[in-house]
Image 1 (cartoon, rainbow, N blue to C red):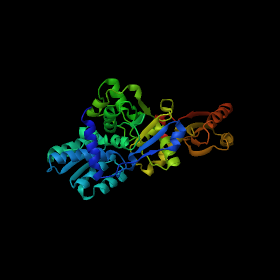
Image 2: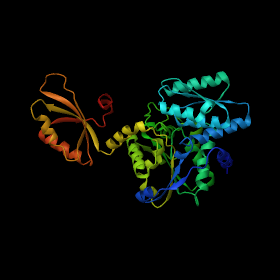
Image 3: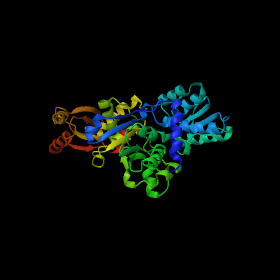
Image 4: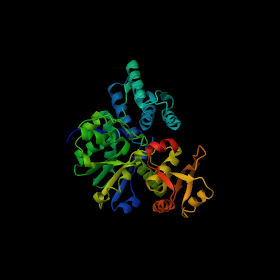
Length: 415
């Protein structure tokens, strides 16, 4: 056994001065739905509503133990890491300079300032995170501050492993399966490393957003690689390049144990957990729950822990989440309809709609005096089977149309 478990337990014990252990809660609904004994490790219930407070605390604690004169910490973050650093700056009585992109939502900026109070300064620099990160690192070099990485730091990894320490202390025996979200890899590297030593028989599954699969790419290449494009919808886990230190701990993970979660499907999970359980999860926090259905045969009858890693959800995003969930479930579609310019043509189309079909968007795109005009139509329904029936009627009537629901290029300009 390595000394990692002892370090993780020391980190967990020390952070009790900052916040209580997060609950490990059995979920009856998910257990019944998936035929397993499913528990949620509620990292969305830390003081900053994510596990990021753990790694920041442990890294700052160890730096200050080694050098009490170090009183300035710097980070670059647009979200949870910034809030964790801010909270701990106030706890330790140190100064923090937090660099955030200019494009960061105001809600996240305000929360970071609220958690840090007079101990933090927020600097908005750069339109993109790479610019923000460069500015933060340049500032560290100029003033001799300590840079706090969000994940690629051994002390941060050690701090995130406290999730596993609590998990085992809260259960009667080790879980059969643990499902972890993956972004930069700090949480997954820490929890996996702890279990490898203390409960090697526990099975692991890892989940990445489909648009930010940095671990999948690294496993395929045998080393961290930079993704050419990242979908930032799952902002808490959409990382272009997994950390070198975190990948060193995850490099032995079988590729088939890493699952990809489509962003639109994650929206379905967010709404389901909110509506059924009253639990608010951010997109990254919903990753572990999102793959339960796909893993149903593998987890049947087993005791499973899903780590819900964060709950910093901006409710201004709720309409977008609902929209994406409906599209994934096949309950909402957009299409371009070529409508003949004659009296009664629109009525002919409307008569094809079923009793549960609602028009959510109608925009006439005709730009000149032609025999046909184009209409952008959005339809919502209660049963996905309604759309094949509608399209069959349209085909039979000779209406020309194009389904653009999944056409990202067209949708970017017209939706």
